[in-house]
Image (cartoon, rainbow, N blue to C red; front, side, top):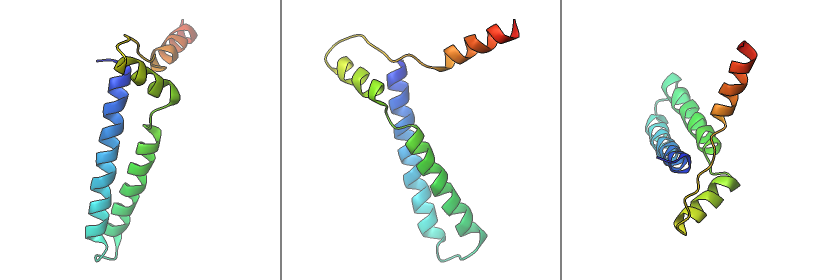
Amino acid sequence: MKNSERMEKIHETAQQLKELAEDLWILTQTNEGELEHEAYQMVCLAQHLQTLSAPTEAHKLAMKLQEQGFDVDIVSRYPLKQNKNSKLLA
């Protein structure tokens, strides 16, 4: 699976989580108290995750090129950080 496809799935999952959190918050609104507060915090966290997982311009371009038949992918930044950390430890 390409990184761009993986990012797309993460964003879709974050959107689903946000919708579920909003439903839970609505169900607990009559329950004035800690449960409602926890549900509201879950909504805020889900919104933050959705924002973080939103496609970047590079991701949008990669997806557009893939739709046109090009074999392109975005490069994950995590391996770069791992390489940097391994150099520091050496």
